[in-house]
Amino acid sequence: MKRFLIIASMVFYSLMLSTCNSASNKLSVNIGPTKQDCKELAQGAGALLIEADKLWDELRNIPENSSERQESAAKIKWLTDIAANYSVYYETFCK
Image (cartoon, rainbow, N blue to C red; front, side, top):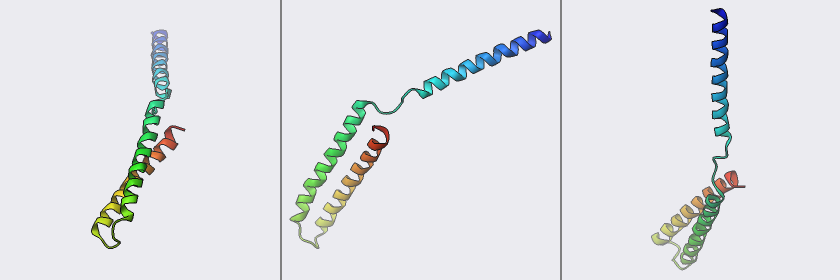
């Protein structure tokens, strides 16, 4: 009976180790963004910056103390902040 328990426990532990190893292999597979995702991310950041540049050109034509100027400045800040976040993600996961 003692031999049976030893053999059964060895089989159980070997099955457990193989299961953990299999799960570990699945986790070690690159689950990050694909090249296409990175390309789209870079294009998205570029599009946001182009839009901010257009708003910046419009901002130059608005009088200094106008409330419309503050709204345009806020939109520019928002667009550039989002583009900066995209850039950080790109630098972290795509390079």
